[in-house]
Every structure is written in structure tokens, then in C-alpha cells.
Length: 581
Image (tube, rainbow, N blue to C red; front, side):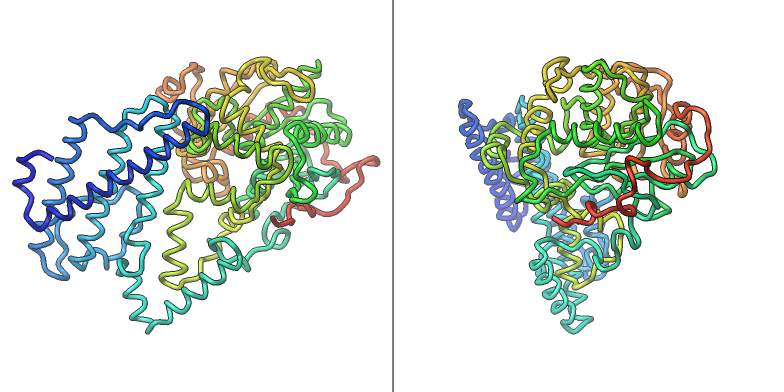
């Protein structure tokens, strides 16, 4: 820090600033040691993590000191109950300090603002790191955010005025309830995000009527009963992600994409993936998921409907699996489908979002050694990774609410689904991580061999509808857009508002939010967005019109589900989706 800055700082602030700067330096020293360890484990030359340039550091330190001086002066000049001017404000959407108790007390007001200043300083330090490797820098920014979020004063009893007020008002009962909640969650092995007793698959979730008409060791195929007298002749096969359970697409009637499809007059089939057990399901590979998943399902759909080329839809990694399966079919000389819809799906993993920064050679090699030849990644471990991508919303909010305040989480269908985790077979997962996230091989024609065929996404030349979400942190929309440059057919790209789930599951019945479309098809997503037009409401309605154009003629709805060869096995949603990790 410069001498001029030192003169502006009151004596009582010197220790506080020194402590904050020492904390930042210590944190980045720890990151440097981790960086060196990762370089060593991957076989590359170990290099010291570079610090920001001296001028940048000096500027950050100067601004940091000036803001803390301003905050200190503001605190000394105010009295209890009189809110002073805020030196720093939380970021938009940050609700951790929204309660009036934080601003009414000078002490807690100072505490939260000092935290926000320190957090901003650490973020700026991480952003200023001169690291050429984009993935390494993204990892540093991710770890910095985890550190910042974990140390928020809202997460600790002694520094959270809401905890103190609630404890006083309830005469300590909130503390007792919080301990009970903590013990209950320790027994469950996860943080409760919703009232688990409020939901049950088949009772008030996954209610669209239908039957399981086929099953194998990896999936059940559900055919849904028609809800209209006339239906489009060409059916639709839906392939959800195997990383989660399918009923995010069929939560309740008012927000069910599956029910919407059926109500629009389409004959719908859906793949319900089995939750692999550690003792019996740990050997399945990527090829197994293609062969026993969409390829097997397409054969059954063709046999039941007598339509040679169904329409297909893939969601998230389900879209990656589905498109890979179609590329295998095309390599075999087949014409498997009439159209392809991809919801928030990556085919080009150049920028794989926040998950991508967690995948490196060392981590993939470790997984390959542990479960690459057999075994499973447990669902709770996977769920924890996704939760910490949005730690304040999906972790610390419930630590504060459940344990500090002693509250029970409210009933919320989406969070019940989010907590219903699935295992993944080790051979499948490690192949996926290496070839997609780490090496980005799928985009290279002929680079990957699947089911004995060299695949080329350019040969998947059917009309495709590509949907992405503008605030998606798992599948960045600009990366999803790059699929237009890989697929061989005509593509329609639509950008929905919100994030990975809320953007995709945006019910037409509520018709909220908005979506963007453009007639132009530039290679660059930013150019596309400049020309795009915003439309109010749900993208579902736009997609339904597009799909209707590939649905063929209208025919009378089928009077029975399945066929002579594929008799119904059990009612939807079937057994597989009910299996817990």
C-alpha cells in the first residue's frame, strides 16, 4: 500500500486492513500450492502461480483501503437504530443481508459491509490473476467464490443478528429445533431443501397417464396416453438426462412438459433411466447407454407406431447421448429420425461452464483409476457438486434457515427432484468426462468411435430445434449455440430466459419470462443475439408450432398403448424412477 494511502487510514483501521490483506494473501498462497500440486500430479512442470502485476495490486489495495476507511467513518458517526449510507451493496439477487436486523445495528451493518468489501477484493484479485489457461483461471475464480460464500457472517450464529433475534423471541426453541434439523440431516446424509414428506412419485409427481411398454437393464420406455381425439402421425421420443431423474419434465400437471406435449396432440414416449446400483450397475459404458437407451427405444417406438422416422428430443446430457446415438445410426447408413430437438445441450465443450473448470487431467485420471473399470459415482456426491455451483442458494441458505433459525424448509416440487439424486456407472462417467469435458472430441468428425462406428455429427442432417437458457451456468448458451456449426441439417436456435432448469421448464400455462429468436444464422452467437428479437412468454409454444411442422398428418388417437409385441408392463411412471440412490 502506498504511503499516501496509509496517511488516510485511522490508526484503528490499520490492523483491520492488514488482517484483510493477509487473509487475501494467505488464500492465494494456498491456491498457488494447490495449483503446483495439480501440475505435479498431471505430469506437467510445476510452476508458481503468478500474482497480479504490481500496479494492479497497488490499485486494488488503494481502493480497498479507501472503502474500508469510508466504512469505518460511517460506522463511528451513526447511532443504533439509525441506518447510515451504505458504502457497498450486495450484488443483485443476494438476499443474505435483506433482513432489517442487518442495517439497524451499527455493529452488524459494519460487519456485513466489511464482508462485502473483503469479498469484492478477493474476487477482483482472482479476476486480475495473469493466468493464460482459461480453465485454470475459471477454477481459481470458482474456488474463490466458494471461500467467500462459506465465510459470510450470515452463516455463523455469533455474527447473524437474525439468529439472535429468533432465539430470543422463541426463548431458545429455535436453537433446539435447529439442532434437531441438523441431526436429522446428518442421518440422511444431505441438507434438506424441501419437505420430503410432501411429495411422492406417482402420487403428486410424474402424474401424466401412460404405461411402461418396454424395459431393459438400463431403462424403461414409457408411452403416454393421448389427451386429444386427433394426434400427429409422427410420434415424439424424449430422452432426459441420466444424471437426474426424468420427472423434472413431468413434475405436476401445471408445469409438466410431458403433459404439454400430449395436450398439443403428439404421441409421446419417454426414456426413464435406471438408477444403477453399486453391486449390479457399475459396469455400464457410454456405448451401453447409446445402445440400450435411445437406439433401443427408437426400435420400440417404430414397432408400436409403424412410423419409420420419429421425432426426438434430448435434454442436457440426454441430448448429448441422443445425438451421439443418431450419429451412430447415420454411420450405419440409416435415417433414424425426422427431427431433433435439443434442450440446454452441449455438443461442443469448448466452454463447458462452471462444471468444466472442475475437470482436469488429474481429476479425470483419479476417477479412471478409482471407478473407470467398474463402480459408481454415488448420487449424493454428484448432487453436492451441482449444489455448490450455486452455494448461496442451494447450500448456505438452508444451513442458515434449517440449523440457525430452526425452520423447516417449505414444500417445493423442483427442490424435491433436485434432492432425488442418481448414481452413475464409473466406465460411462469417466469416458464422458475425458472425451467431452476434457478433450472435446465429439466435435471432431471421425475422432470418436461408438458402437464400432466413427461418428460425425455433420451427418446428423435432420432439422434441429436448439434451445438454450441465457443464465445457464451448467450449459452456457453460447456453447449450446455452437451445435449449429456441427449438425448437418437446418437449425432453429431459441434462447430462453433464466437458468438451466427454470429456463427449460417454463410452463406455457403460466407463460412467464421471455425468449429470443432470429432469422439469421451467423457462426458467432454474439452476432446472432444482436439480431435476435425478444418475445414475451414461454418458448414451449414456439417449439410446439415448429414440432407440428414435422408431425405429419393428423390421425385418430391410438386406442391402446403398446402393441401385441410390446404389451404394457406397468402404469407410468414405472419402477425405475422410484429407485433411490
